[in-house]
Image (cartoon, rainbow, N blue to C red; front, side, top):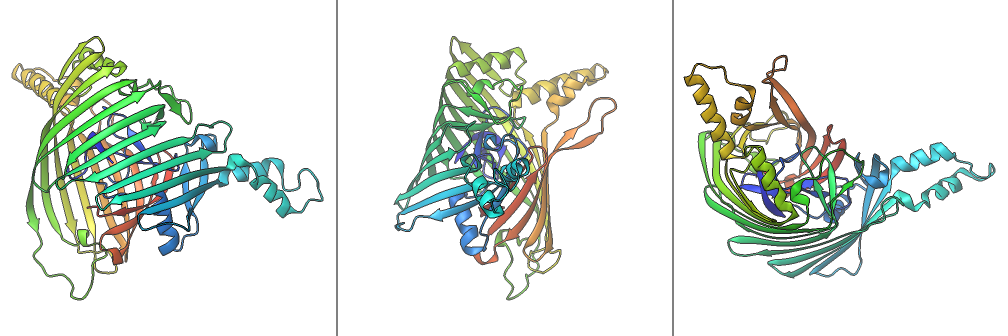
Length: 477
């Protein structure tokens, strides 16, 4: 499920679904036009549906319940620690996979017991009957019915329905996703009611109905790639979870938008180890077994046409001297066209082959993202002019030139276990600020599933979002 976005995932600038335990589906779409919140893994690989992930943990990792925590979950009234368990339907066929995913809000159960006590309403009632009475409260539960149909080797259809017992959130979530693999393209057609989005401040929004058609070329290590996405939103967006004072993003307003992008990628190896690996020892992850220092760069252009209320963002961009990220914006009534260029430079360094038992993997990655070529060119022009005239450049000029910076560090601890932290970096340019400040870090422990070649179970925590989640991921670099 890739949709155009200003985020580098190793293959191009795609709109990556954000992992979140706020819903049973486990994902939310970033608000188009906003920088993505700092989430674990700017590099996202092939993703299983949430029911399949939970089913894998139960079957092969002997985890009877999968824990999660979300501070934005409305059925937890603002916060909640939950346990999930999936039931695979017994009459599943080779080309059909059906599941029922259940979730129990443990934190709300504990609060209910603490408030009402064990022996209510009769003091003679046994404690286990009192707990059973608390467990009968439907507001503690959420359930997801999911069916995946494998129509052909290249086609799949996923249907899901989420239902929450909380009286404060009665709207069920319905979603349908169709995938098709062409020889050199991937097609995704998706419809959701309501569709869940997350903005740059970490706030969640529900759009009553959202539909998208997404066509992307299969990316390669080097060379060109392109991407086309058509998106339609219907209905007025509403805040999901705790009310926030953030204004609704214009791109979520009702309307139709069509986006196309083209990019060129090039990679170089500054150094790559030619030393032989340990014989008869399989790496914990075959994709993380080559020590190296390498760099890559992407440059491209994007154009978006908007029809409807969502076209108002063009006027916002023009009023703000294109600081919203678009270099060209033309609006007539409720129709608009936006265009700009973008670029990214990344550096990756790794030491160790991830074969030994202790400290045999150290990885550092840095990403410099220039989401708007016009904004960068404008700032560079003003900076050069100020220097030429021997004037002190102002703060806004530096901010326009500075890229969005993201750093990632991973260190093996013991065996297949490694520690990882991903974080944005905020450059302090004002007087009294630190020169560099960590922004929105995400901490994780990864467990490499050696028998699968390149797969891992990831337990991550985001202090800013106050979210905890355990995921299964494949073929990530």
